[in-house]
Image 1 (cartoon, one colour):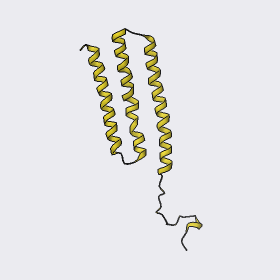
Image 2 (tube, rainbow, N blue to C red):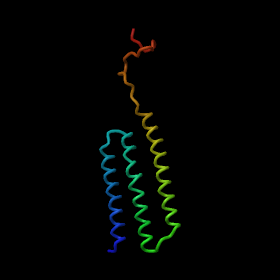
Image 3 (cartoon, one colour):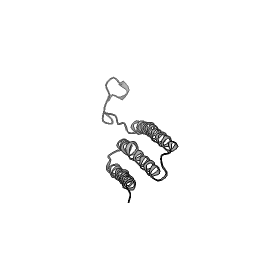
Image 4 (cartoon, rainbow, N blue to C red):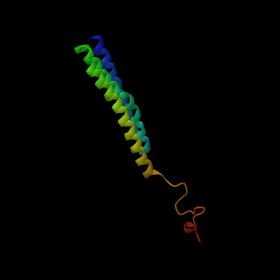
Length: 118
């Protein structure tokens, strides 16, 4: 193996380990909102590491190509933007469904005469 293949293999193993850890953490997460938040490290770090590994491999085999570099930067930036907006909206949707009132069901609320017990 050459030096670039070792670097690429290490980066791919790192990204795969992050994916495995994220999958295990998602399996153990107590609720949907936590599961949405657990995708952040994988999408924010793991997938860009895969893009960088592909870029290093291409540079080592074909030489430096500015088009590949620009595409990699656009892909990483787009991934971060789409992932952050997507996780924000998923989190908002899940939070809106899973919010539980702090008062127990059937208890009266202060200031709400319709819900007070006779």
